[in-house]
Length: 452
Image (cartoon, rainbow, N blue to C red):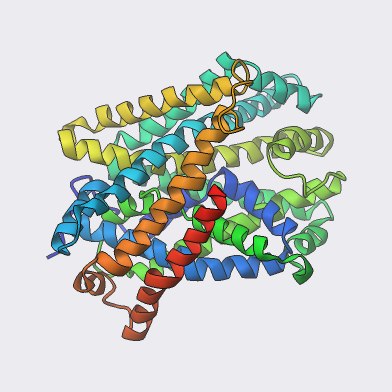
């Protein structure tokens, strides 16, 4: 008999897809994927990336969802119960701890960067009502990074927005948020794409993104595509496991919702490229110069020169803020769910505030690494880059590797078949082979590459 999560349930399959896509679509997805595509062979990279999604991303995504849906509790308690039911070592609970700690670490610096998008959204909102223009974007960005109090304010505001949603629970918080935020994200993105069409450079932007150039494809390209496929789906941090715990079983196919999330996530990333690159190209900017330099310095310069540039800038940074918000909600939920189960459902607000407060305090290290402590180095990295390296490059692949091994080798076959009951036996066998052999091997390569 199927259980019900004490935290609540998604009201429909669509709500889960919106929430899971919101988790997957973040700041890196909006900019990093288009940039990586353009820099790694265009359409050729997209095909390699889709292959990696099929071989690594989607199988592990399905594993996280089915593990969560079977357990109906937080990742740590779900893995504890599944290990017991499968007659295997309780050591597999470490997967939950790795995911939760990684989520807290990622949220700590992610909130700082998301604060930048809120700051720029506010700057363009002020311009809209007659405020001063951004005449020197480089100086504006440098001034923001050099001011710890300003950074701390926006970091705190973004964290408060995140905790306000998570504290209300699944139905009143998470579902209401994604019901509004995800359509808003899609509408903003489509408006920016439509504007991109008016620049006259949409054809060049599409060619830049999609024209296959197999000559630049190397072994490193495959590893980059595999890493992007893994990270873009929020795998390894137990987010999808947590969201899967709230997924209804009746009439919901894990394989189909997994495919829907992967396709929607990729579509948003490609649409982001079609929204950004026409503007970049129309002003003679270098589209290969990805990262904060282009987003916060070069693009604002273009916005100041283009018709309705203030509105475009407001929409663009508003889009980034929404994408960051939907991702941060999913980062906070797993640890919050664990504390709720430990202390009782009546303590959800306190649990969310506790985890958010811890992550906010850790985020102050990233804030200070941008100014007062900029000279501090750990393994030749500044503090913020070091925390990002530990969480993104080490803990997430480790979590994904352990999830693949757990689902492929340790988890009871009866439980797997029960959760994937609609899957034909041949596809189930192929999925299990991917989980046992292919996905662990490829994720291990990504992990070793990060270390070496």
